Length: 592
Ligand code: GTP
Ligand code: SPV
Ligand code: MN
Image (cartoon, rainbow, N blue to C red; front, side, top):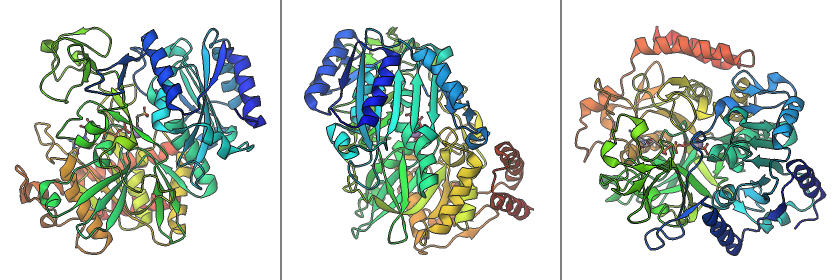
């Protein structure tokens, strides 16, 4: 397949350790993918769904103990612990290699090892980076075929270069106690064992395109971020791009595919999706920040996706999609999840593979759900009705605004703008959000999640902040930085802001600010809109007073938050840049 000795020598070593019965190279062809799908169906790994209703779609169920990323079993293995920092789990590389070698040894006996040459970014472009994933899972192969650009052309583009990310994945026994997701940024290596869930095993995604790439980005002067990329087309045809970082399961896919509300649609506004999860950002020759989406598909949260909340995502999943851990409707041989519609299937199998009685379903008790709360669809970007024409542009798109946001029931207002890049970096660094089902562990606990990157920075968080500040100094014409919160609740716990498509109303304020077309009110935390500048035309339950309420800056809770931020900065430790402490001091001073 390739004469590249760096590749062949490494594969030989990995095969000697894992001892597969045979090795199969993935060439990116439809014929081979079709064969693998057929094989996976014959073993029960995949279930073929109704070809008329969901052409080329499949259902997969993971092991019951293997349904989300495992942050406590994810490690950054740098020679010096200090380089991984206090937020990451760290293991010494030699210790980790030794420990995992034991788990990998003989783990592929009697199995096939698949070799997946893939590209993050457009093959052959300046932005692209290459990886090879070795795996014993057909599910992983089929997902990688959707999520990345796979095939022989990647090997051709790599040539005889040693510059590729070496990824090894083995399902082994799916033993939770011995599950490890380990990154060796100094060796361009990722080792994952004992899991079969997306973020733990699709090594091009979080492991490479965020953890390893963030490490490379710092070294090479660019950024890898947990961000969607969205284009907003104005009635005059001009398109402005926004990138936004929200923590896992906090609305990136939804915002990336939003459909403008009628008030804007009727005027000719349109939106275009460039990416829904990861952005690689570089400084362009024109002095602006340019973004590409290194992925080729979407690994999106299924529950809550419906014809009203996200029709674009729903349509994207109508063909060529792998559904993971959703409900199987046996009458139609289709899929269902909570929040799809109000007609749960009567004859159904839940995500655990058991007969599911929809009448026992209780919204408040997650254990009665038919679909796992972190059930997902793997869908091809090319099937997205609002895919940007720039999706395959190797140069990417110029970013006008960076938006941070999270799930905050109280403190954060609907939107505010930072004073400048340094303050914007501070705003990103103090992000906090309620935890979600995307990672194993408690759900709904507020934790600090800087830039939505807490689980994904491949090095010391303090150095990561310093890199943000450094980038700001190097971008002649930087994007403006904002923070949003769609998740403020009333006393009964209901969301006050309608969200979804109506978030466009906030994005247009943001873009107007970028062009100095609208004023703002200066507060202790940043610039907040004048309530009347958020367009509420056509909104049923939202009045000017609702907006005023959503925009309030509650000084006592911010003072409380400031203390918590200081504590968090303390945990990050002595790599924390002084500039961010200066920003924190200044915030406290403004709060009084
Ligand atoms: P990852 O793929 O895990 O990185 O997540 P993501 O950020 O792409 O999350 P996604 O867009 O899939 O959002 C997941 C959850 O957020 C779903 O339960 C949505 O219904 C909910 N959600 C998204 N946008 C909004 C919004 O504007 N308002 C409210 N209230 N909920 C939203
Ligand atoms: C996330 O958890 O942020 C995801 C899904 O986007 S995963 O690929 O599992 O990380
Ligand atoms: Mn994500």
